[in-house]
Image (cartoon, rainbow, N blue to C red; front, top):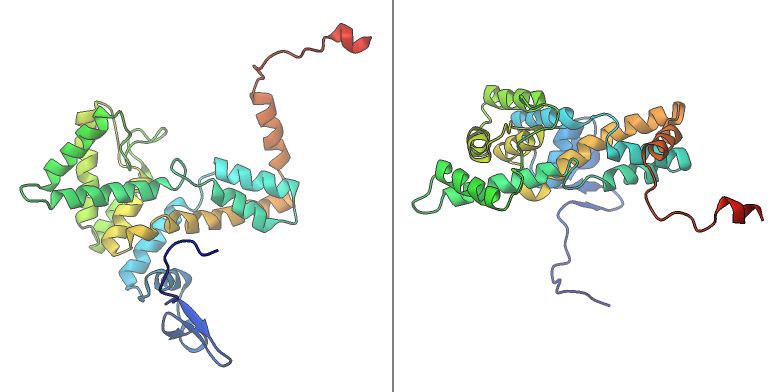
Length: 271
């Protein structure tokens, strides 16, 4: 059964025949293998354009910043899945990636879209960046919403990863409208929200990537690709010295049951 109206049966990513494999207009064997690094290839695959040296450098910096973050929920899910099914690396990888949503890792996409919306508002007649930022923050405060890209439970004085990324963007001449918007948010939000709200890595990454020319529609691909590398490291270690069942046991000990008591008493059980 056909669902929806789809008229254009085309893809611009890849094609092959008996003699060639074409990727985004490039011959895979003669132009890409051994001649382009994976980050540049990733950019080419997604956007259809070969990136500049600066675009590759920015993407590399962002990927390195969040590839590994310890035993976060997505890593625990992956490791416990592999412990239960040691033959299913693909299942364990999927378990880790499926848990990357609005709270973990996927927050970069939310922050990126928030920045894009503010920049769009700042270009309206009679508006500017300062006014757009203040208006947006006031609306969030009224709704008791969180400010995307700001705040961190551990790094209350400032996320060191974000600080390094922003300095890197300045040094590379990448910082543009998106970074300016993020910095305005970081400057104004604590005043409006009445609490410390440092720029975090989930805000810095989309700001850098947007200013480097990365499409907002593909922003979630950056943390997904980054964390995939970290998951491989955890799954390899899990295959050598498993802690999946240890984590499962610790969770069982940490969580107390507060449901209804059993209707079967000790005395009835023994009769």
